[in-house]
Image 1 (tube, rainbow, N blue to C red):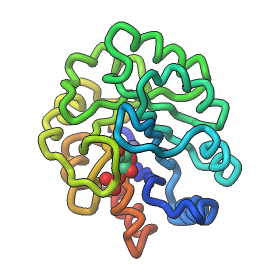
Image 2: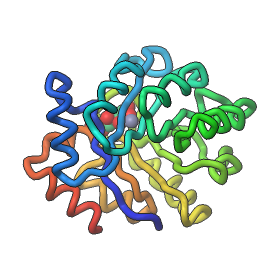
Image 3: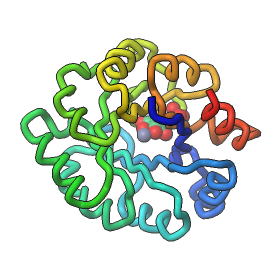
Length: 215
Ligand code: DX5
Ligand code: ZN
């Protein structure tokens, strides 16, 4: 299994102090930051666009992992790449079987790493053909749209089935990831842990990352 990494999800950061929050993530030992883009259409919430990613890019050299929760992500892939995204993750449900290959090619051509995200009720086996072509697969362990929701344990067998088939793939989980659920998802085969509210609320963020990455 590839190395375990904790990805602080900036949705839970204090955006009035964004530069300080980014610096604090680096000081705590994070190497990758997770950025949630929501379009008020694919998900009910509305968050950030390329403009904010560009501001983040100016204040950190950490890897920016950008999660596009949007309809027609192809329209914005190039803008998010130009803004400084290192990895761009698109939802398979937003793209569909017939256009997924073209969308993957578009992200690759932009120069970013490419990720595929799956909602909790999406069957990964239907998308295994595409997992071979990407850098990471991300299982949503909540319905996307908001931080601070409860982890959905029904996703666990899907993570296990995917790890069994793809031993070297970066498998990321997003939603309700905390000290209680991290040992479970690692046992299932996830190695990249997106963590919003649990990470930002923790009094010892460096200790949190050290603990999880050492499991
Ligand atoms: C939810 C977002 C997550 C969110 C996770 O739709 O994709 O990245 O920040 O937040 P927590 O860790 O609080 O569940
Ligand atoms: Zn996310």
